[in-house]
Image (cartoon, rainbow, N blue to C red; front, side):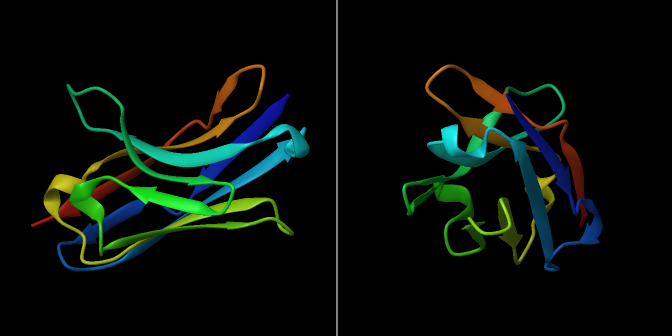
Length: 114
């Protein structure tokens, strides 16, 4: 079992920054991929960024603005979000993949006012 807890969401103005943090616990060694997804009201949950064996990948809309990083010693995954836009408003979810199943955090709200 893996538990994921997100923190760091909030309300900011367009152009400002936020840093999300996901803290993992449980069977950490079984995780082979982690990432951030987001879900805006009335829309499906979409991938934002992934971290797989040290390789990062971003959706085009956040490239150059968001940075994902994983701290293996602290069992954390972070998402640094700069130059935020109103279209970044969503609930952000931390994700972890193991051989057996996927895990999700409870989500953290990010609201960007224009």
